[in-house]
Amino acid sequence: QVQVVESGGGLVQAGGSLRLSCVASGSIVSISAMDWYRQAPGKQREFVASEGRFIISRDNAKNTVYLQMNSLKPEDTAVYYCNARVLSPYTYRYDDYWGQGTQVTVSS
Image (cartoon, rainbow, N blue to C red):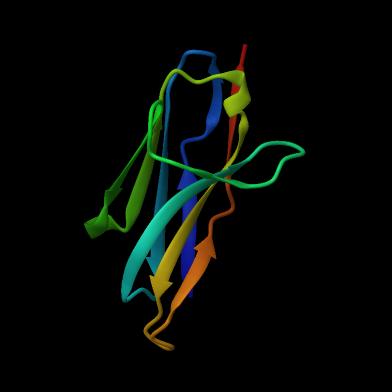
């Protein structure tokens, strides 16, 4: 089994910053990718790229990925999800695992 857990969400005023963390644990041989997605109310889940106000970094030794969000805007309000592509020791294939999500709310 693989667990993916996000943390760091919360309520922040427009212009503020938040840092999200995501840790993968369990039966892991290796991780080929750890990515962030977000889903706003009434919208489809979308990929979050590391660019501009959002910076993604990864600590491979800790199976952890971070999302630093700066100059937040109300339209950044969403549930932020982490996806880890994990090589299983049982099947030796890569499978995708999702976390439960962490809510980010940006007030104007």
